Length: 208
Image (cartoon, rainbow, N blue to C red):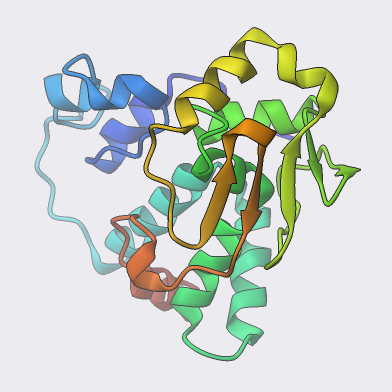
């Protein structure tokens, strides 16, 4: 399955905003978005007026890149959100937020979603005491995510879990760093999802 393997900082510059794909570097003055606030490539500094379709497309691409989701996966997630009750845009974000790799990141057990995806793939986590190595696994309310016993001595994981105690954990999650575990208390509402995204543009794009 194809996945982008180039510089993730180029993706942030292309979208014209920080997508926080690089972990701690995104919070420093070394962030390329701060130093070169224009799109990459030889035409990056051109000021062409975007079309309505272009604006909608960029918003969809921004959401995909933030959560590290492929085009087919994103479309299937949107289709599922459109069939659910309630506001489609909020349902879409809730489905993206409930991915296992995102939950691991939100709990502070990874420095970025990309790192969380790698850790999940390598089988370092369990969900309700069952090993899960699928980053897109849909976590539900009440599920308990735990670092496997054998993985707790891995230097990077130990460092991440220890630093998780000082991080701000979303109110819809709970974390017990002493037990290397966390629980999903409920699904987040839109106000609790700190993503600068105009999801209604994504709905308009797919409604064309």
